[in-house]
Length: 271
Image 1 (tube, rainbow, N blue to C red):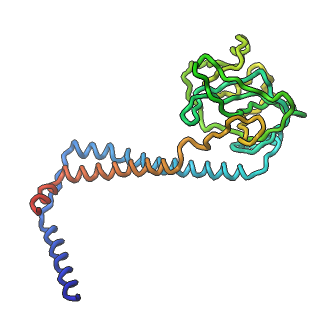
Image 2 (cartoon, rainbow, N blue to C red):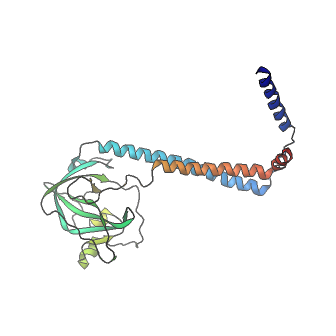
Image 3 (spheres, rainbow, N blue to C red):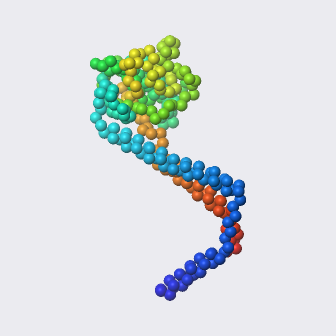
């Protein structure tokens, strides 16, 4: 056994020394060098950016889970609070059964529909809150709007404050359908393409309107299909994207070495 191991080591050492005598030459041309210098940093930056996005999404999920475990508070208590994202709240009051907005192009399980937003007047406080009750399916024709039933009595609901991460993309112009145009045309419910609380508050006392939308909990009274994803892209997908970018960087380096050296000739000669 010892002699066999010694023989194997001698063979490996001889093989390595043979590779060292192969006279490997590296002569990169300027075109491929420029390509690598330009593209490689971009690929590496994209990979690390995706890893950063993964950490951001993990922090958002951790924040959401922590807030979900908290006891809902009366929304009037949030006036002086800075961090409102995912704050659990309890509302007691009545819905405005007439002023209904339908947020367009909301998809659930492959079906297109609308999120239903309505005003909620808090009992005992001069406060109006825009409440997203959840999703309803659209009808076969775009011109046919879904029927939305609204509780008429005083009700207590729970939900959380939704603070959007950025400005929603809209296919409309700079003045999309808002409360004024809907009220002027007497077209309720009103279809909108994105949610702007200041624009929706037109026609109501903006001093009384809460600055963010409250999304109802799925087990709350008056909730429709309230199953919004916490984040649009899961952290694992960002890690997968990072692996793809890093793999492309490695492939670029391999191509550069292969193209700029005589390694292919050496391998053919050895075979």
